[in-house]
Length: 402
Ligand SMILES: [Zn+2]
Image (cartoon, rainbow, N blue to C red; front, side, top):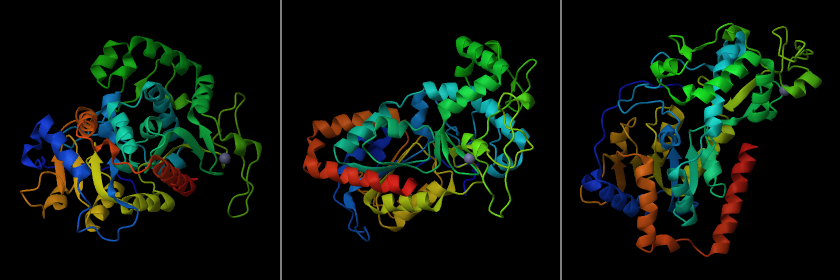
């Protein structure tokens, strides 16, 4: 189950010690990626010379998206912000209005944001044959945009689509956003204004106010004459046209107002973002695919995440238990990280473990340059075979997720 984790995290011990400069950090990571498979590695399926990446919000910071956590491991975006829980979203029409009103405004920023140099460096590392799989906790789809040929498993789903909780069909977010604009003209006008003033580009409530946008203490936007309680959202178009029979044999109904907004007298057709919400469980097939990605690689590189969510931390523990060397590139402490490095000898230069406390966009592009410079760019087996393997990989993930 996905739950927010807010405990304080201790500052990291840098490994190896000279990885505290950019040059030292790149050299250590270069050793890490090019080392022969560890002799402690158990059940060598897949490609034990390859590395699997596990990424989190930190890698998207350079794209202008806020990290959930500051370097002290505390929520820093908005101290009073409380994420919506899955059960609340399902049960409560009012909670959904609030969620969609905020999300309606937030989508514009996400939609404009693009992958950054760190995502593209991972693409290069994939083409060079070092990385075979990426597991991400991010829901921004940047990995799959930056490296469509390198398989990405989205552990917590994605915001680019919605899923109907009744019939489980998907709907593109763009289409849904247009419906929200049509059903909420005052909000649509406000959004146009807020985009023009730049008020949405800051997370700072004072700056937001200075640019003409008022927020409540709990982070909700205050819209004169259009409180979020009046916000409207559409139903699943498929369930609207064909209301299904529920599991216990009862005919469901999907009712809409004159303009097509979902009415609370309905018993089906609620759309949710295609993300794993807090309090919601990850689908077993996604969990299994993530474990498979860990087991098919010889090393784990953790980038831009404090492993705050249990589902992500579990994968790192699995890698450790398999005898995989672990590297961490993250600003701020990482949950339980001492255990990942406790049996590490002080003389290694990065081949058995790396801990770097720097931004991903500062390190990964330099790492690609370094590997190219030192002639490691041809690690890749013959092009045709690895392209074929990549295709197969992609199919595996697609099948597991469809
Ligand atoms: Zn539906």
